[in-house]
Structures are given as C-alpha cells and as structure tokens.
Image 1 (cartoon, rainbow, N blue to C red):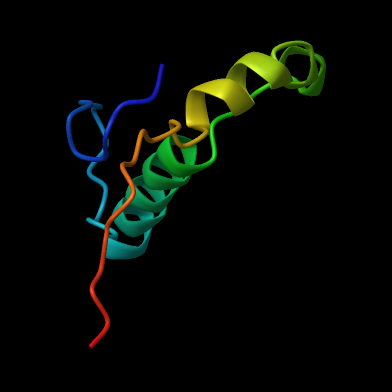
Image 2 (cartoon, one colour):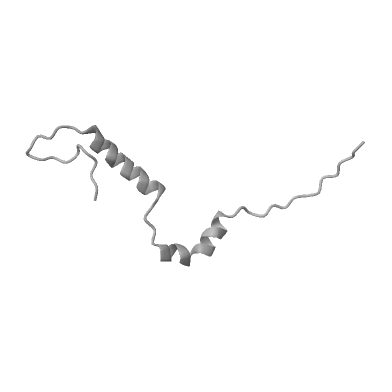
Length: 68
C-alpha cells in the first residue's frame, strides 16, 4: 500500500521534499494511465476489447439532393 508523503508519522524530523511529493504523484498518475496488465490476459480478451472499443454501425438513410 502506498501512502502519500506527509501522512505517515515517525519519531525523526524529516524535511519536506517537493521532489519526493512530485515523484509520488507522478507514479500514481502513471499507474492510472498505464495500468499493469499481464500480456496473456490482454491477448486472451483481445477480440472482446476490440469489439468494445469499435465504433457502432450506423443506419443511415439516403439523402436525395436536387442539383440544379
């Protein structure tokens, strides 16, 4: 479990590090954008994933245009 910087307590005094806080936030954002997915799981469900992401077919009616 990851705890954000500053919410854990210890007996020693530690100077606040903005770089450490930035690194923590960056790591959290990267995990959301690029989740850790096993390749075998992705490949097994590839057809289901592709179907879910595909654009649905549209039923369009022909448009009559009078070109004068």
